[in-house]
Image (tube, rainbow, N blue to C red; front, top):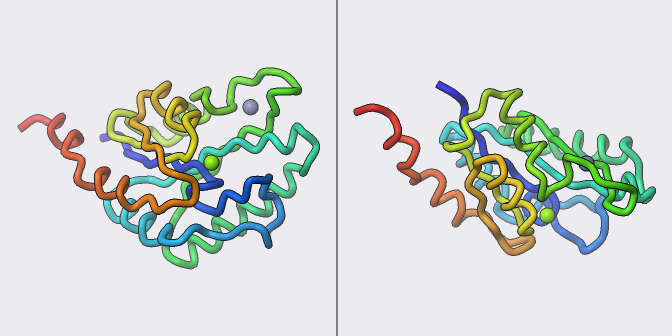
Length: 172
Ligand SMILES: [Mg+2]
Ligand SMILES: [Zn+2]
């Protein structure tokens, strides 16, 4: 059987959306309640995959190195709490420097992750704080949840873990 996953936007979902690019580790702070929510998803058999637009790279505001540092810190802090992030995918492109295929609302990064980890989109979900997140999800056949920036995701998790759509598809 294929894997199931919850795709997570980063800024505004996992960590605080500050209204500006977050690229220094001391500006990165986890949103309240996120650890418990991610643990619950994981305990219910979902892989956790982060999909984030980081256009500040192409805009020249920061570098891939900054992104790598922030993600290393994020992954480390989560793992110290028993939360395993399978992968982080980011689009470094900025619309002003040309079109790319990976920036949300395009769904390429969700599709890439799904292929790499053998994920069944119909049993997977995405949580984001922008419509482009849910658009990227639906483009890949994944059900998306839209939250307010920096708000708890527990209501999404409630629905996801109680979702019987998964079971109803398996033969009786
Ligand atoms: Mg966001
Ligand atoms: Zn891109």
